[in-house]
Length: 399
Image 1 (cartoon, rainbow, N blue to C red):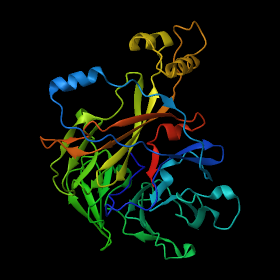
Image 2 (tube, one colour):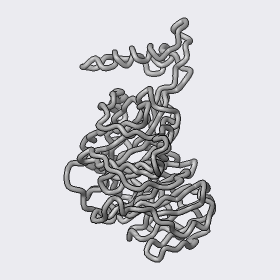
Image 3 (spheres, rainbow, N blue to C red):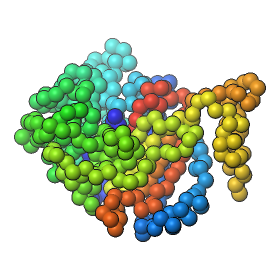
Image 4 (cartoon, one colour):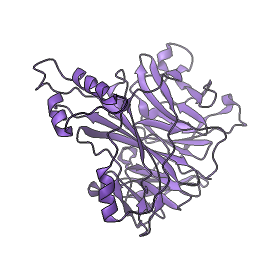
């Protein structure tokens, strides 16, 4: 289940001051994590709906496979236990890390220190941490509050990061425990009013009223989303990826949560369609704005067991572009083949992040569409990352 990225529906359409960036987090450092800061490309303008003939003509001129680029160098590194990607969350313009801190030896209460990284200044400050974090699902509400739903201890806690509150006065407060086993959670979302958190299991949906601080069961059916759903103010809908097997890779939406939702799937599959790539995980990041924008961060692996010759045959050979870019791809492909006869060598696993930036709108038929606005970039995942990072959903924040 996607457990990172845009956790909540923004309460307003206002954007924070200053230019925003996408932050990707990897545990490719021996002592912890590196943060990579990316500037996303401009989204293509919406195009009118195309007739079937126009669609066929467009497919004949589809762009080539995007080049595999290297990530920018880390903008900051954070010391924390590796293999725990789900212990990051974004609150306002800060990124918090609720990792246990017992790697500091015998320092007093060391395991209860929480680093807070300011994405704008890249400064680090410290606040009281989450005691015995277990395996929490971190849910951000608005710009100041983060909730921790512990999947091991069946606890529910909240931290308010009021900017007027001194750091040493911040503390996690216990809330009523959930009415379900936390490890059964399949999806969650924050309501459009910012006061209700909806959490689904396989067979029911539960609602936590933040103001009243109480749980109740709102439905005997599950939310239709795979992981997190985002509220889109401009369209007045909740959007997320469908968990139905027949619409894998498709967005779906509904108008309200907590009842028998009228779920409408999109017609476009946004996951990678490259036969040489296998889907691993994803995070859908809400970019906000007056024109609803998103970035799909998809982790894919290069299919194992294909030789250079096999891939060349499938692709009809590699041709040089004007910059000679495919020469480098061919060299890299050869490097990834085991030593042997050169024709039957098998591929090593290689991981990529596919960043698909797009806008959403409704077409003339009322269907949710990206309107041909998708812009795709591919980045090579650092080889030093642990399998916990590669096999989990990407840690990505828009700040």
